[in-house]
Length: 126
Length: 469
Image (cartoon, rainbow over all chains, first blue to last red; front, side, top):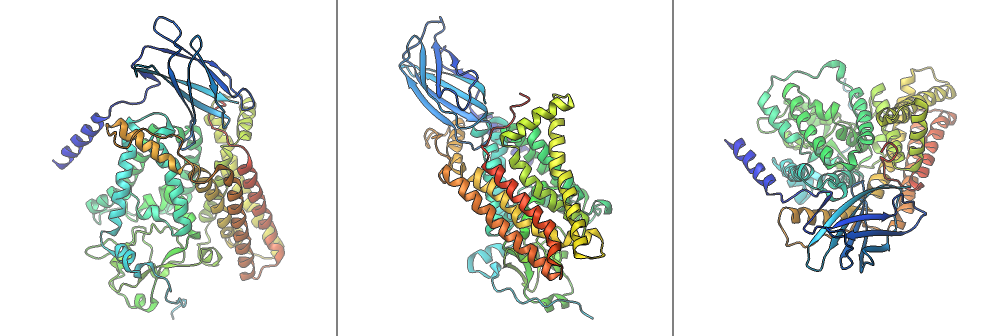
């Protein structure tokens, strides 16, 4: 009986989990594209360019972008950046890689009405 | 006629300190720590299986690959084998032991050595590289499950805690490292043990199980195989068992502390070279080597390429170099003795440097540069389960010390390790009345290892897993 109660409690707790973090998501129908760098290098450009468009393909210039670059190893410091005020949907901002290897860059675009969209990009920094 | 050596009463016995001593000797003292660690393990399992798939944002990966390793290294340096003392995997094991009672079989004689531990350690670190365990919360959670299952199953069928003593790679790591730890089990009065009939420290009494790994406290010379469970202290009717402070180099200086066995010596050498190869796996030259080897072997299988690289680094090199050094050392000493004896004489000198390499890597680089990362990860976890009171995660948190302190700090740690190893080497050589020349091959090997460790630590780190996509 105790085991059954334990398993039920465990299932209940697991069921309470709101969501797993997905590679894409959000409440706004936006498309986020990474334009540069597509093949980043440590000694290359330290800027990143992202284009944000709406469902109709029209550029979105009033989004606030928060960018987080994670390395694959647990505990490594992420690289963080923010950007706003796009031109023709294009946002360019400083982004300095701290290490070569595999990175996962997560870009979240939040609109003035607080709806948002998120996209992840897998990159290899050489 | 008694051959008992005189052993003075330990001056500093942690079990006799006012509060900690009572807690440690308390019948349920270990259980408190185990339950705490069990809660953490359950949290890690939960997040590992259901949480974010990005390793730096998941409790399973961050706690395992940053905090567990950092905690273990600091605990071993400042106290002893505290993880095995509080190991949650042995909780179901204790249950299994009580279920099976005395009907358990003995662990097969041919497996009662460290060969299994060496093999598992080598395979474990190969899997770590091949499957990118540090990058997968899901696999990390499965490893935790595997520990629980293996511990339980082995304990149901066999006596003598074979999981801890012969199988568990964490235990193996902690056993070997704890030989340079300041805490050890000993007894207050050898005469009390000599006249003791029940030998409860190893046999147990009605309330407390005796030593799980079947070590006999008055004869213990080494921390090898001691999980620091303190069941011996709880079971002793005379309160004669002590958890005493010692010079951390006392054990590796002592000529008779370790058995002169091939398996024990090979374990230490393999453990030493894994400390290097594990760090080497994180720097750019390993990728150039992987690419070159893949071309030479005409394979795209990362598993095969890594098996070759780490087979050479973790098995062939330590075995070959240690045997070579032993052979040359024996010749230079002019001795006629088995190679195993020469090897056993000098192997313990490797431990301080080996521990320093592990410490610089796990505690220095990973833990001190990332310890505070647990704060945003925990905040993120709480948000995900609907608890908002702790606010949004601040992902900028991470380092405890500035990043530019790391290189000098690691260098200092490695130099202290080299100095301690040289001191032990010289001490063991003099105790055996060996010529100075007999030390030379070991000296050369120690310096080679130290230089290799410094080079690896000073190379820029690279995130792994890029060569084969």
